[in-house]
Image (tube, rainbow, N blue to C red; front, side):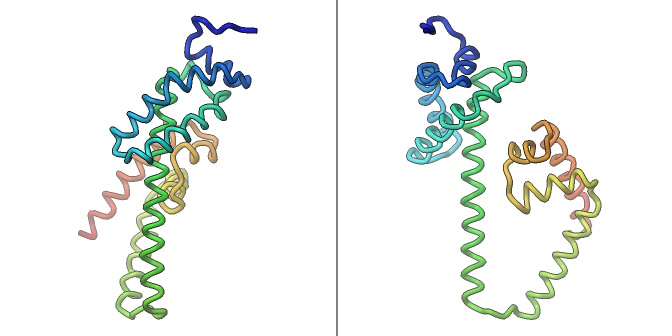
Amino acid sequence: MHDGVGDTDEALVARVARGDREAFARIFSAYAGRVKGYLLRLGAPAAVAEDLAQDAMVAIWRRAASFDAAKAKVSTWVFVIARNAWIDKLRREKTELAYRSVTIITEESEEEAPDSAAVRGQTEEQVADAMATLSEEQRQVVRLAFFEERPHSEIAERLSLPLGTVKSRLRLALIKLRAHWEQYK
């Protein structure tokens, strides 16, 4: 039996990875309130911040084995998980709102007006041209991030890439796309 007195956060997370509930309780008590406060500062309403803090703590329990002390401190890892939960929530809401607006338009009229179809076709062509300016690696991350609305962490996992590489590819792709779109202004 381990008394846990004097354990560092890293040692506690290692114990959590082995299923130690007492270590998780200590991590939870050390971080849950701080995570909620952080989410409130990011703009989450109180009830949402509470839910997301709980979700983040569950993610810590589930992902403890993936923590790498060589890459980040426990506190950084915990707050990144919380931030990503908030971003994912915002993306889901954005997708839901976009779906509702498309559904409302579709319900109003089953047929697309000819001028709308022409504009849509032209826009789709411009998007295809813009995407063609990117490397295959950049197109891949742009598709996942913007067309499929996947969080950066999921893209990194899905493509077996470091998170920094995903972010770097997205940043470079957005610079290229922005330059391409300047010609249409």
